[in-house]
Image (cartoon, rainbow, N blue to C red; front, side, top):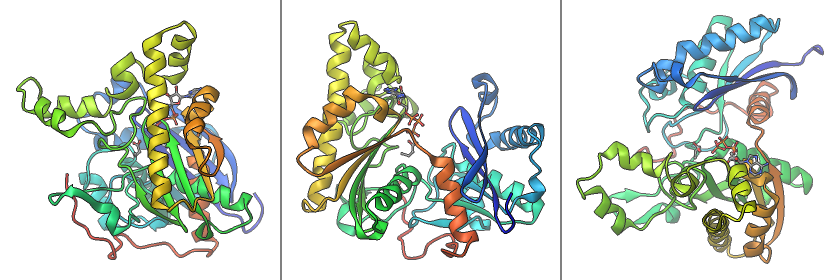
Length: 369
Ligand SMILES: Nc1ncnc2c1ncn2[C@@H]1O[C@H](COP(=O)(O)OP(=O)(O)OP(=O)(O)O)[C@@H](O)[C@H]1O
Ligand SMILES: CCCC(=O)O
C-alpha cells in the first residue's frame, strides 16, 4: 500500500450473497462473493435479522485472507430502501440506521449494507458511507405525476451501477457527467431505464414495484384493471400477488427460469414460446428507451446498456433494432458495483466531494407504500 493511500472495505449485500471488496485507493486488492445457504437465510424472519450472521461471515473471510482491518480508512456499504434522496456519497448516521433497520420504504437486502458498514467502522473509529442507494430520487416534478392523485411515481432503481457507468461514458467522451444527456438501462434480475439529464436522473421506472419493462423475475407494468380484478378475485393473498409481480413475474412466470442463458438454450432448441417471450422483453426495453428519448426531446448523447443481460449478443441486437436511430449505443455488460462503492467513498476521503448528510431536506419525504 502506497503512503497516503486509503484502504476501503466495500460491502454489497444481495438476496443470496454478500459481495465484498478491499480497495487501496481505486485498485481492488481483494474481492469475494460470499454465497449464503438459502436454508440458513430462511431461518431468519426478516432480512434485517441476517445482520449479525452476514457481518460475521465478512469478518471471518477478511481474517482468513490475512487482511488487517485496522488499516482501513473507511467502510462503504450499498444503501437500501431509505427516504428518497439525491445521488452521492452519504455518511451513515443515526437517522439512516433507524430507517434501514425498520425498513422505512420496505425490506431489501441492500438495507444491510449501511448497517454492517457502520458496525464495522464504529469499532475502528473510522467513517462509514453509502453511495447512490436504490432510492436516489432526482426525478423532475412532472415525472412524479402518475395520473392518480393518491399514487405518486417513485424513483427506485439501480442508481449505483447506472451512475457509475454514466461516469465511465463521460470519461470516454472527455466530458463531465453533468454535461451529458444519457439513457442508461440496467438489465439484471430487475430492469431500470434511467433518463440522465446533465447528471440528474430526471425520470426512471420503479424497478422494484411493478413499473416499466418486464425482467427475468419481475412483471413490470401490467394492465391495471386486470390486476385489480385479480387482487379482488378472492383467490390470492396480498403477499402472493406481490410475489407474482416481483420474483415470479417476467421470464420466471412465462418460462420457469430467471436465467437468460437457459432461455437462449431453449430458443436454440426451437422453443417458440421462449423465443417470443425473450423477444418481448427486448421489445419492452426498446419501447421504454424510446419513451426516455422523448423526455430528453431527442437530445440524447448516448444510450448505455448494462447489467447481466447485456452479455447476450442476440438480445442486445434485438433491443438495438428498435433504438439505433436515437443515438450511439454503448454496451457495458455486467456491473461493477464494488468499484463504484469504493470510488464513491474515495471522492469523499480525498475531498473531491463532501459527504452528504441524510436525509436530504430538499426532497419531499412523503412515501406511499
Ligand atoms: N452470458 C450471458 N448471456 C445472456 N444473459 C446472461 C449472461 N450472463 C448473465 N446473464 C443473465 O443476466 C441476468 C442476471 O443479471 P445480473 O447478474 O446483473 O442480475 P442481479 O445482480 O441478480 O440483479 P440486479 O442486477 O437486478 O440487481 C440473468 O438472467 C442471467 O442469466
Ligand atoms: C430496482 C432496485 C434494485 C433491484 O433490482 O432490486
